Image (cartoon, rainbow, N blue to C red):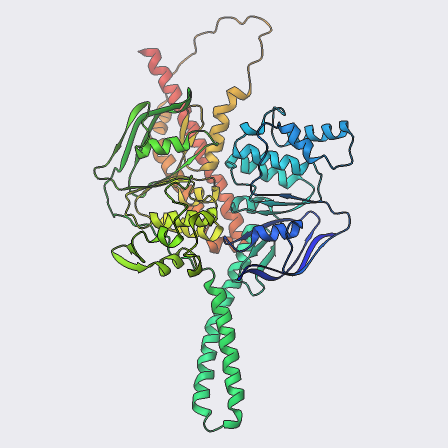
Length: 609
């Protein structure tokens, strides 16, 4: 395939802080590359270098003749009074097109990204729809290469899935920065991670995200073995030097040189291996074993006349991990606030266990004073932090959350979104909790931090209510998912995929309006009812246990599906995913059968009452 963009020995630093050096790779036609790396590794900077927006400190960038590049930034501001159509036409102003061609191309891409009204003003768009507008402006240019910086930001799960499908079907090559692991698994052909834990400063792998994980784990395991081997070699060199240097003075310089070489190599490997350490995220639990921590009965809420949820019953105890899902604006945050007690329901009640210790996290990052330094935000009283009854110096505490000492005197206002999230999480983990209410804690977090957060949420013995657009985290952490439709309907299901199927059935009547009658229909006859057979009665009596067993099987297979040993064995991974799909289909069939039997029984009871 033809090379489109290549970089050789690329280096970039900001002041004394080097981002990367020696980067060398090529993007070919139809390659779809997912770029990942820790916050601050230089991903966005590298994308700007590839786009030609910034210049490298060293190295070269080459673009093949005739290759058209387009760049999608993380955030793009639009004049509020300009329409969607006008802004897309603006993007085409420099294209060699006549007026009709410009208008036709604009209308095509506006429809492709989902807008129904081209005259809608930019000032009325949500964050997700502004992102779609940015994408429409890029698509209108008909590029050969698209460089996308966090395009999944501001998109709900439905929007992320839409973007996956769009990018998989477009003919251009692309590089995307995202922390959405299912997106990376489903849409990419190559993975690129920027990080100082690699000998070359990066790792590029052909294949999906799961294939990348296999290669990365093998490489990091090899580095760990190399470190152990080098430690042993250094011990031997030093011991030999001490015992022989006096007797063999002519060889002393050579021996000292060999020892220094071994020490330097060990230092380099240790430094790379230490780059991935992040140990601070460990939530403090009270250890409370009350069976019921929170109970909600018949709760309902509307905003501006729009019903968000109604008639909702919910109960949470230790070990329950509930995921809240739904489109942007469907009422997830409102439900979280009702459960927290900071927003009153319109109907029903929420009861907390006595002296419940509740800790919450806001997606809006409230509670952080932008004028404080990082040191002041992490240690509110002096230079020490109290955690689980012990005192830790702020420098050590900061390192546990990925902050080097030189960042401690930086103001909060200059920190990235991911860094601010880590500051808030550092505050959360110091608070003992029975119940965690987390609203979009993964926003702006890099993959490494998400993985550590997942592990600790799995270990947390209390109850959890989690709002996130990270489907991977939902499937891995949550024991149940509550879907919020935004029209008042809610449904408790096993996982996000089951909610998608449930949502499709909830929307089906609205999506398919009834056809007008060609002629009057006769009056409907009274529906025949019947008693359940003895076999059906036994089936109905035992169906809840059958569903529980089937859902337990789904949960077991979900755990296997994210196990590293399974992910590294392609045959096992294929078998597990096939079994998971079959198990989920069984759960769905049991729920459908339950509804069918209940309907027959209720109809018969009503006809005889």
